[in-house]
Length: 634
Image (cartoon, rainbow, N blue to C red; front, top):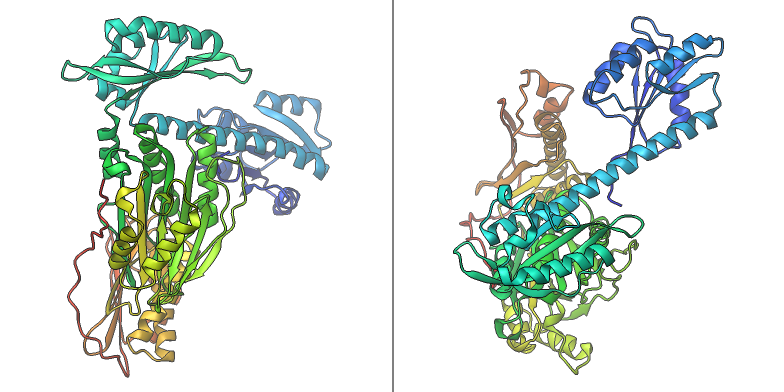
C-alpha cells in the first residue's frame, strides 16, 4: 500500500491538564495530535486541516461542545468527521441524546478508561489511513492510465466506453466527447468489429478476453493503422468482472518505442560540481529491437548525485512504456528526498501494485561528493563496477529481487568508496551477457577494458569495444561517473529542507573551502555562517516547502570567498523578520561582509570573507555542458 501521512486527531478541551492526559493516552498510536483549548479554536483548525476523529469536551466556556459539533457538521468538508464526546460522569441522559443529535459517534464519560479511548480512536485513525491510502492508490492508477502511451478505454460489460485516455484520442483522432459513452468497437474498421464483440463477451462472461490480436483503426489521416488489441476484465473482490479494460497499441511499435525512449532519457547529463560523467544507450539487434532500458542522472539537493539504471524485460511499446513510467516515478521519488533503500522499496511496491508482468531490474545509487561515498541498492541488476586510479577494478555483488517479484522486500544498501580519481560504472545486462556464455566471461571482458583507466568517456568507449556491444541482441546501457580531485573555484548547488541534503552541503562546503586554501578556523566560521543563512532561507524564504534554494560558492583570484544564497519565497515579510533571533549577528561576526536583499518574491544573502592564505586558484571558463556519449542514442 502507498505511504500517506499519519492521521490527524483533534483534541478539544479547555483544560490543559485534560489535553496532556489525552496526549499521553494517544502517544502509542502513530497519529499527529492537534490541540484546541476552545470551540472557536477547534473551528479554526477544521478550516485548514482534515481530521480522522475529533475528541470534543462537552462543557466548555464560550461555544460549548454541542454547538461546536453542530457547526463542524454543518460544513461540507468536515461533516463526515467522527466526533467522540468527552463529558463528566454526572451528565444526564438528555445531554447524551443532544450529543448524538449534534453528530457524535460515541460518548465517553470522565474519568475514562485509557485502553477503551485508545481503542476507539485507533479504529477511526486506521479507517482514515486506509481511506487516504486507497485514494492515493486510485490517483496513481488514474495517472498511470492517463499517462500510458498506449490507447486505453475503460468500458462497461457491453463495451460502452466510460473513460478513455489521451493516447486513444491521439491514435483515433477523436476527442473524448466523441469516444466517451459510445461503443468502443466504433474505433475499429468495420471488418474487425465482430472479433472485438466476441472478445468483449468472453471477457464479460468468463473474465478472459484471450490473447491480443491485430486489428485496425482509422488514423488521424483517415488511413487504416494496424493495432494490437487486448481485452482485460476488471474484477471485484469476489473475482466477478465488473468492467472491461481495452488496450489499443499501435503496431508500428519500434518507431514509437524508439521515439519514446529517446524523449524520456536525459538529453544531456547534469553538470554536477566535482563529478565527470559519460553515458551510452543503444537498442539491441542493430537498432531493430528497442526495449525497456533506461538511465537517469539526477542533481540532488546538497551537491549529491542520484543515478538510476534500469531494465524492463521485453521489447517494443509495452517495455518502453513501462520504462517511461518507472523512470518518471523513480525521478519523482528521488526528488522527494528518499534515500536508496526507501526509493527502491517504494519502486518495488509501485511495481507490485501495478500487477506488472514485465520483470524489471534496477539499481539506484546516491553519490555523496563531499565524502567520496557511493551508496546504492540493487534490485536484481548487474553489479556495479568501481575502477580505482591505478586501474584496479572491483565488482560489488549483492542484490535483492527484481521489482515486483515480492510484494514487500527489505532491500539492503551497499556502500562503495569513490574517492577523487575513481570511477563507477553502472550498466544493463545487454553489455555483459551473451547467449551460450557464462556471465563471468562478460564481466571479465568489462574489467579488462577498464583496467587501462581514463576519463569516463574513454572508459565507456573502451567497454563498448571490448564487449562488442554493437552486436548485442539486447539493449545496451552504460553510465560512467568519476569523482574529480577538485571542486573548482565556482560551485552552484541546490538545497532542500532535507536533513541529508543539509549535512551533505555542509561537508561539501567545508571541502570546497579547504581546496580554496581556508584554514581550520576559517572553514569552521564560514560553514557556520553559511549554515545559518541556509536555515533562514529554508524557514523564511520557503517555509520549509518541498522546493529548493540556490547556493553559490565562489573564490576570486585574490582569495576572497563569496557564498550566495537565493530563495524564491513569495510571502510578504516584515523587514525585521530575517533578523529574528541572532542569526544575522552570527553571520556578521563570522564573515567580513554580509549583505541582504529582501523582496516579496525572492531574497538574496551574500557572505564574503578574505582568506588569510588562499590557494593559487586560476579562474577557469565554464566548460560546456557534457552531452556524453551521453546523449540518449536510440
